[in-house]
Image 1 (cartoon, one colour):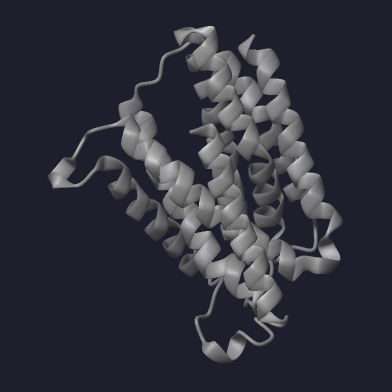
Image 2 (spheres, one colour):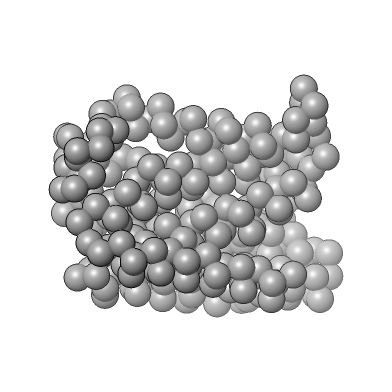
Amino acid sequence: MAVLVSVLAFVMTLAGGFAAMRVRDRRHLVLGLAGGLMLGVVAFDLIPESLAMTRQRPLGVPAPMIGFAAGFVLLHVVEQAVAIHRAHEDEYAPHVHAHGMAGGAGGLLAASALVLHSLVDGLSIGLGFQSGTDVGIFVALAVITHDFADGFNTFTAASLHRADRRPAVLLLLLDAAAPIAGAALGMLATVPDAVLGPYLGTFAGVLLYLAAAEILPEAHSVHPRVMTLCATGAGLVAVLFIASLAG
């Protein structure tokens, strides 16, 4: 049952990715919306869920928040190591990135993290059905409702600063298939919340860095800012609405 339900997550993820592909001529709006969706997922889904999963407080700080900071710094270190982003204000007009071949490394890393996140989503479905059909259906509904955003964000992040879309398409397919694999694993194995909580916090930090340092600056680089801001706000509101339904 869990694997069959996860097929809906597969379909929703692909739908989100295909939507990102079709609006390439409105890239600034796509990026603005993606930034809002990412911020919304971090604030309204990942952080609350990670904090609810574990009560561990190393050094008096919740473990997921340590993971959050580590994830943020991790992507920053990766970005600096490959000289992706030069933080100079005069570059924000054309927003030129040095070393175009390396420019998508941060996006590919974040997209790969999204694939892992989708695997955990599927795992959550499987574990939910282990607890009972009602619980499993509720968890599956929560996963399916935000998988459209996952697919949208996976393709957008993986194609950032890249002319070749093949890696983005591959990661989108992996992201779509991940919930099915996760659901199958979730019916067979038990993963402690003490591990899942810090992971979700780390992923939230990666996602926030990508949204704040790459996606949103790129969205606002050369296009009218009002419409882009509206797209970002729409993404935030959409995730808040989905979270309210899931809750």
